[in-house]
Length: 472
Ligand code: UTP
Image (cartoon, rainbow, N blue to C red; front, side):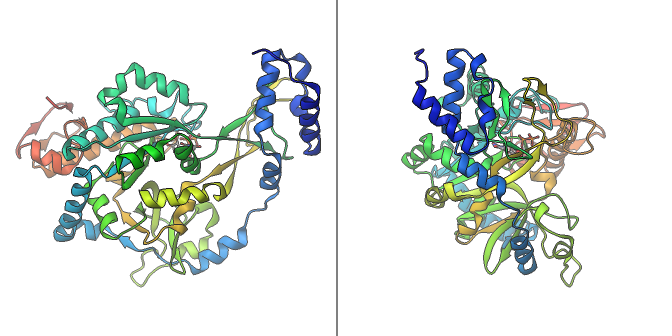
């Protein structure tokens, strides 16, 4: 439909833009063809400029964080000691296995980020990370869920969140690969919303002459997007009671681990977060804390040295729990949260955003030039009843692909090494003998955890060469 935009409609958007000091968004209007004009118009029409102005104006609530940090205590926790205690662990595992057998679990994986630090030109889920198999992150996640579902004898529906920049390519990739053998009915791909970014003067940025730059609205956008896409209704129809949440860039996520799920159920937690024990006070992880009985996260950027460095009598850090963005939501809590999804606060991130200058030239900034606005899913924590954290050894549950070499951490090589180290450890624990320097990768369809490896690999089995252990 190639109708032109009528004059009053165009005038009204012009005046809205002028009012908000954003008239530059139309500076190339006369150069655009009709289709481009319509597309730019419809994008501008959807932007809430009042909200954008107030977000830009909002000064960081430094005082709020300082006050909270001063009162912060460690959160209620299931620690590695609890996981090591056979009786406690086995009771939790039984509960988790029952919930899985009863089909009460679903999985959300968020894959809407743009992976700018990795410099990979596709959705991050398409990154080949299997140390020997070169399998992609998407395949590792899907295979792990299929294996868990097979173990339970019940489906675990998977909901993959994309964003406008990653959506079409993700669908194409998964379709071309026949959903990696999963039942298509058990996977839904849904797309999160976007937000414009602004420069140091609060002005929106043009990505092209006919397009305002917008970026995904953060993983806090998940809740709204789940509802809008019909995924919440789908979960409800399936009788889902607990929703396991992880990020696509961490292939070590202990997806629907029965023991973890069991502790979450046993403690009647509405939101369970997996955490690692911080090794330094100012470590770059969100700090899960408890303030006046309310569990919440204080971002590392909002925590100052003094509260971060407090120790207990044994010298260990008082605020020890670092979030790894793995959560289990009670489904009822998720639906209750829908009402609050709009009120989750936006956080500001200073990032590099290429843009068109007034002369229409593309500028690739060398340092951060723009503020992006994102919602964070963990801002739901304070509203959750009985929230707990569960500790995990990072070697067993957390190693994310974030950076391209030559970065010193979180590069693909680090992650591949972490996968092999974990799989070697599982085999060792099963009593296998593995020669020094041998790379091991275990296909999730063969085994997804230590317990499954122990069932399948006999003590004394020898591994003398690089081995990709696959299901027969
Ligand atoms: P990161 O914040 O690490 O972002 O996201 P990223 O896009 O992967 O990488 P950078 O910062 O651009 O280099 C952590 C996880 O949250 C998801 C990402 O896909 C990743 O799994 N995410 C992030 C979303 O799904 N949507 C978002 O808006 C942001």
